[in-house]
Length: 286
Image 1 (cartoon, rainbow, N blue to C red):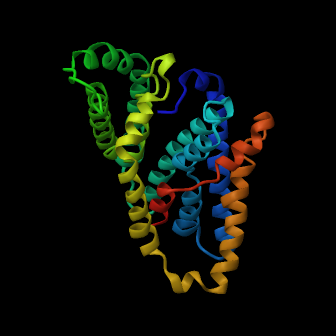
Image 2 (cartoon, rainbow, N blue to C red):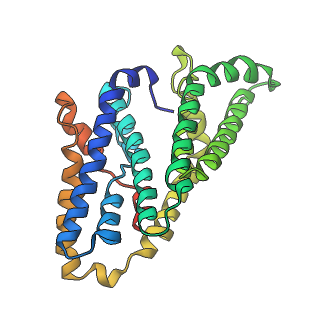
Image 3 (tube, rainbow, N blue to C red):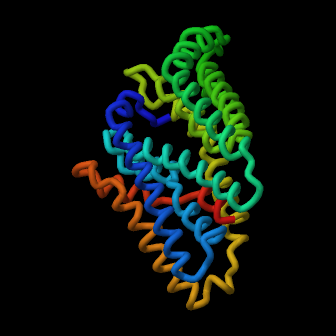
């Protein structure tokens, strides 16, 4: 919902370059370092490099929103780069599994291509179709509530549309690669909805209805997936500590921090914003 299509046209090409560099550098450095530790290229080293490649769109959004720079050019560059980074990482994810097993052209090539085409169509609809359809045809036809209602019928209708698009897009992209694509595109579908004098209302409607559930579901997700899968005894060993420290400093952090040297004064902000990892990286690691 925070995506600014006008600014994305300006920063988009450079942001895509940041995404490519920010994907290939941790992939290469993580793979080479794992091989230096004595592990084979397939599947161990390549799996580590692939797990370090994605950037968390959610973490970047939260940080930019908290400091109030989300609508700046470099803020939109970060969001665009993180999104493209995740697309590239999913392609790597499919390639990794095809190399470690029987090659499946449908899952490795065709589905990611169809998914990318679907996202392109959905982004075009976010600009050309949904604002007009919702503001002109759907919301004006909803029956209005009498008196002063805590939640207006327009807000209720808007939230229902949000949930419907979220579930639909998430389901479609789930079968094409990952539901995360659909969730992100569903949010982008409402980025152009607010009129100039009422910016932020759509986001407010969403947050008002989901903030409590989202807060608890995030805690449960990380506790019941990531935390439960960590081998604590191996994690606390000296070997895991020194090898993990080097892995964290170089492929995990440094390769992202230095991925935007051509972005001017904002290069370090963009680089550090690309460091965050989240659920997709854990999915690959598992």
